[in-house]
Length: 333
Ligand SMILES: [Zn+2]
Ligand SMILES: [Zn+2]
Image (cartoon, rainbow, N blue to C red; front, side):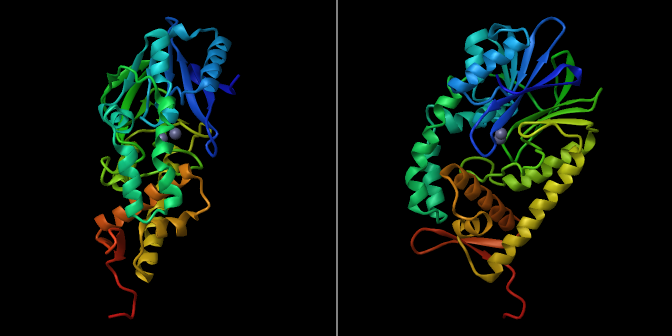
């Protein structure tokens, strides 16, 4: 049975297993007075998580058939994965934003070419063959975690939704994932924030070909949207619920500004590829999965420096891409 914690207002946190280093994703089960069950972010699909759900629902006095709604904050497999499986069990509604749905098609749709595109693009940015050679298969391995794809009921940002007997304002942000939806309950100051804001972990911000071309700028601007609401308790996608939501946003913004400065300094020393910057920031003793996130995050920062006119990218003779600082070192001509 997965670890479960019951919070106020009938919110049940269910820790669904996932791979290292995150270890678990938080799903939230909300029960309304009419006997319906809503699940926020069901987790990745595999034989272990299916069993965890059967046990968790049984513990709460329900079966899979009682699930009437699944709300998906964003299209990443650790959140969206089991949505289609739940729908195949109980014919439940699956809520998601249009943008998140489009991203899910780009990543896992029948016509998806992202596996090859991402591999070629990371190679251009200097990622060695040791990683690129396994990249296509690595991405294909995610397919079982997100199959079958559900039929989606589109939810828009700024709309209102009733779930689990509570009224929620839908807040759409980007940067970690395009079309990410958080749910805010004004009556009690509750925020279901998925991976938009996480305690302890800085949500990954990835530049990916064909997706948001300015993800870090989007991420930082998106966080400002949360300034308009008062949050007493935040329920994140990873780690544990926390009450310091607004302080956490300040810290995340400061972290990214600091990292941008760090990278600019490295570029002022010498022009570098995305991989060289990535290896300096994150090391290169990473698993393939970690390396993909590290590369795409380093490139999101480099792209933001380009957007701010702090850096420029140019092609090398062998078809690679290299970044150069706009500002020269002090004392040089
Ligand atoms: Zn995510
Ligand atoms: Zn996640």
